[in-house]
Structures are given as C-alpha cells and as structure tokens.
Image (cartoon, rainbow, N blue to C red; front, top):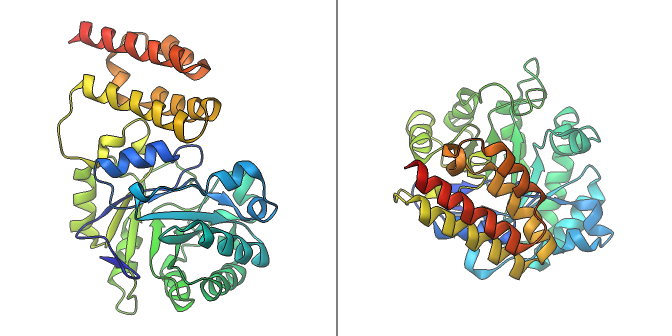
Length: 318
C-alpha cells in the first residue's frame, strides 16, 4: 500500500491521532513495536494560525517515527489552508484533515465531525488544502452525522475528487460518539466501489492484530487504524509475547521519553493517562485507589514508585 510515494507495505496497521494520547513518546514506542504509520495529536487550525505555543509544540516530530502524519481540524477555509502550510514546514510525511472528531467542543462548533453537516464547506476546505501544499493530503471522517444520514459512500467519491490520497473511515456516526459497535459494512462498500482508487483505511473497534487481520480479510481495506485500544499498550502492534515485567519497563520508558522530549509537567500528564488505562493492571485487586494515585502524581519519582509497587503486586498475583 502507498500514500503518495510513501511505501507502507502489506496490510499496514496505523496508530490513530488522538488528543492528549499520541504524544511523541507514545508514537516512538508504537513505531518500535510495529506501527506502520503514526499520527500526532490533532491540532487546531485556528490555534496554529494564532501561533499558540502549546499547539505549535504538537508539531514536533522525530525522524525515528517516520512515516508520520500531522492532523489538523477547523471550520474556516482560510485558517485550514494557512494551518496546512504551517504544518508542511514542520516536515511530516502526510497532512490529515480531521472531519471525524465527535466531541462537543469540536463538532459542536462545526469542525471535526461537525463538517458532516456542511459537506460543501468540507469539500471546499479539502480542495483548497490539497492545492495549497505539496505533501499528500488525507482525510479521516465517519459514516455520517447519524443513521438517517449515512453518506460515506457518496462522500468518499467527492473527497477523492478533491485530490486526497487516502481516506480513513471510522465505522460510527457522529451521533454514536464512541458507543455501540463500529459498522464496517459501509467501509467495505466504499472499498469495493470500482470508482474508488485511493487507499481506504478502516477504523473502529480494532483491539488486537487478530481483529486487524479479520478486517483485512472481511472488508478488503488497504490499512487498519487502531485508536483507543492502544492506551497504555504501545506493544499492541507487535505479535511478540511480552512479560508483565517487560511491559512495565516499556511504560517507564514512555515516561522518561515524554519528560525528555516535552517537559516534566506535560510529560507526566500525558503518561499517567496511559498508565491508568493500561490493561496490564487489571489483575491487581482493588486497583481503583492506585489508579487515582497515578492520575494525581505530579513527579516522575512518584509515578515510577507507583509503577514499581504495581510490579510487585502483579508478581504476587501470579
């Protein structure tokens, strides 16, 4: 599979762009364990244009994580075009346009999945961004606004006509948010459409590489993207069996990388969310209290000590 001239191999599996999740430390680890492509946290076009420091920092990428995409969102045509030009200067391999985020603070203002209620503007933004930059432009969106407006089969062709070089489809509507089951049947229909010649990337409810394999075999997609199942689990992209000790070592490494690459405050803020969500701690009795401590930790030593105590408690349960 290729996006533009980027060779991604057979059956590639991608790390989805997620706010406050896909920081640089996490991306580097996911890449190490086999993610074919990773994406930054999504970036507000308006904030980029206003040169908001915390937003500009999200554009920091490393050659070690390539190929890497930077995703932007917004509702204003000029701001999205200007933001895409700024992103291009940061040197990613792909610029992705977010027309799928369902959260109220984004979609409720007409951006992200909110664009599913204004298709002409979505297409205008897409076409003008494609014309404004030299990098491959891709789109991530959903099946439609709700089940009465399942427009993805038509929308996919329209977006392709705008010049995008790949399309990621999350198998839910905006009204579903993240509830219910992802519906891959419409993703499969888009892929089977003989008029579609760009890669189709499927997303939604992929919790393992086995799930990804089934999606490739059943729906014929070109790539699969994993989102929430990666929380605290960067090794999800690997078929290698890791011990609990090795997994805790990896989470401690993620903390170190984020502190070095971002700063102590934000590095801890990002990492502790992964730790609290990691499935490896489910075997610890009464983990809720420990989870609260993880989410409140403000120093690296404090968070590391909590991890080490978890290591000991997991050993006791074996």
